[in-house]
Image (tube, rainbow, N blue to C red; front, side, top):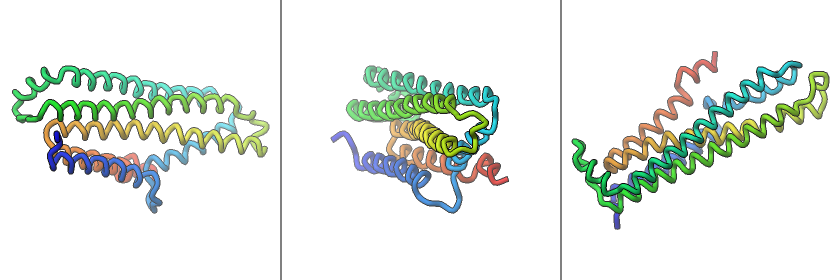
Length: 225
């Protein structure tokens, strides 16, 4: 069996940490909202205020910027997948290089290949999340283009359109957040290439950084002003 007991413990900790953090941030009711949740609320505010405006060119420019950012991360995911597969293809060469490093990485060929496949799977997951988020942002752009005119802003049809647009907008942002979270946890996963103990430490560090940014960062405090 390629996995040692510390490897299995570290991998289990990684899975529990990722899953637990996602549940904590998105699904557990909290008295103190996360930064993501608060910004999601502002999406509906933005759309309702857009309904008040006759000229909406600026809104579409902001939407285009969001799409471009998502496309950038989707493209970056493909490069990361290619890098992970390159490491997998060149296992023997990579093992010879890491054996000479001062940190003294010692691992079997099978375990190294499993780790390489694991990091590739994470980036594949991130790509699907970013790609779907980009597609949803395209759908949101269509709904923004179909926004009722200013004169009909007080009609039930306009209110319903705002709600469905905000809901789809929130879904796009949620999938984008999932993709970014995968990127962060991929950094934690890299610790496993050093040792299982470093893997545990880097995973804990990622969870702390993500939690801090959502609940204790200066950006989060700015939302309470």
